[in-house]
Length: 340
Image 1 (cartoon, rainbow, N blue to C red):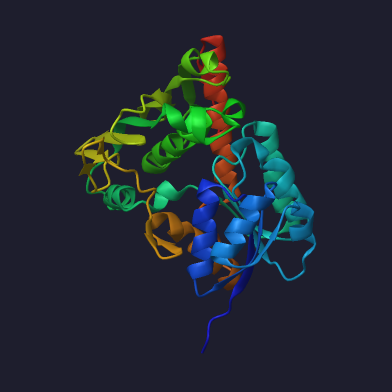
Image 2 (image 1 turned 135 degrees about the vertical axis):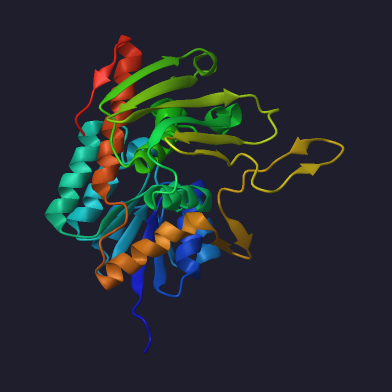
C-alpha cells in the first residue's frame, strides 16, 4: 500500500530555507509545490533547484487550496504576519526558531494556530542532533542521575552578523543562537527555569552599524540545578570554524561534554586552516541528509498520520519568554523571575 503525501510550500529562501526545500524535495511523502521569498531572484533560484513554482507573495501561498502545509524560514523578526496569514488560511505550519523576537508576536502565532486547529511545530533541530539525543536518552533512562549544572557556548564568527544578513540589527545572538542553547538546557533538565539573570555588551557590532548585542551571558536557575550560557556574534573570522558550539553537563552521578564545533572535518592548505561547520547536513546532489532534516520529515508525518508534533509551538513561546526575560535582565541589571 502506498503512503499518502503532503503538498507543501516554503516561505523564506535563505540559508535554512535551503534545508527545508531540499528535505521536502527529497522526501517521498512530501511534494514541494511552491517557494516564496520577497527577493524574486532567490525564489526563482530555489524553484530551479528544488522544484515547485516561485512567487513573492505570502498571500498567493495562503490562497492556494492545493498547498496543505508551509515551512516558514523568514528572518527571526519576520514570523508573525507570515504565520498568521498562513494559519488563517488553514495551513499546517512548521516555523524556524526562534518563534519570534517578542513575547507578543509569539503569543499571537500560538493563538492563531490554536484557533485554526492545525498541526503547528517549532523547529528546534538540536533536539534531533545525535550527540544530544544520546545524552537525553541516558538521562531519561536514569543512567546519569539528575542534571545539576550545565555550561553551554554557541557563538559565530563576526561575518555571520556583519556580512551574511542585512537584518542582524533586528535580532541578536541571544535570539539567533541563544534560543538553541536555552532550549537544549530546558530539554536536558526536563524543566523550565524559575529565574534568569543576564549581562550583555553592545560595542563591536554597533561600531559597524549593527544595533545588537555582541555577546550575552545568561544564567538560568532551574528548580533543581542551573545553567550558564554564552552566546556571541563577534568571534574573529580567523577562528578555524564558523560556529563554536560546546555543552558540558554535570549530573549527580555523571559528566557529559559535547563538542559540536568540529564536525569531523578539518582542512588545511597554503591559505588557511579550517574546520567547516556542516550545519548538520551532508549535501548529495540537490538533496540534503542529516539530523536537521529529521524534524522536517517528522512534521510531514505528523500532519499526514495525525500525530502530535514532537515540539509544539507552545515550547517556542516559552523559549521566547525566556530569551525576552534575559534581554530584560541585561538591560536592567536585575534578575527576572519566571513562571513558565
